[in-house]
Image 1 (spheres, rainbow, N blue to C red):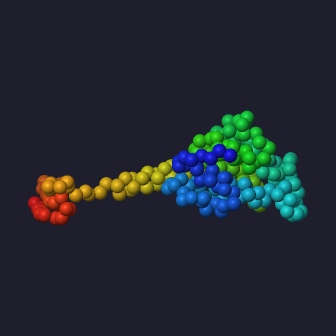
Image 2: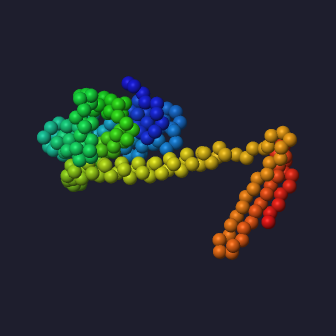
Image 3: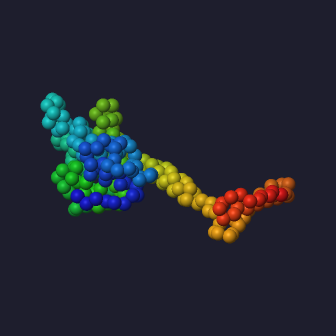
Length: 233
Ligand SMILES: [Zn+2]
């Protein structure tokens, strides 16, 4: 599998998928700042790729007696491929989320849901990968809501919710990333002592609005960085 090396949003997805033995909170190396995907979506992908999602075919594999039919459409056997990609509700949700081009892309027609997700993560932009993962999360939530609470959502609601949830998360995440990088740059600006035989004078001024007064402060250092003199006025 091709490995993405970029540090922008979404790389955590790829890492989770490339290291399926890891817990979703673990990473093979320190995560780049601000590149984490939403926790619940990372957790879902991890469970999916580990074969831990309790779809009905998985439950039967583990000798749990249950009906095999998809709890959403009640028409086909529920496995990962069906519930996320082939179920009529899932397909319409992909369209509603604006991701039908990904769903129908000829490159992503693997018959195993994990393989399909791996290839999508390798080929698509981090933004698209994030949107896809959020949608998978919403589809799974809808499936459970139907199963346990008998709540039924329309595909357009599921797709729209995924779209909005990703946009919300992304704008907050981007804001936080900007703050982090701003701090880093500020930390890099440091005072330096002057060259040999030079004296450095640092000046700062203040203006008090309303009073019409200004003040100034001066500070002199020699080439060893020692304080020589200062004044305020
Ligand atoms: Zn179904």
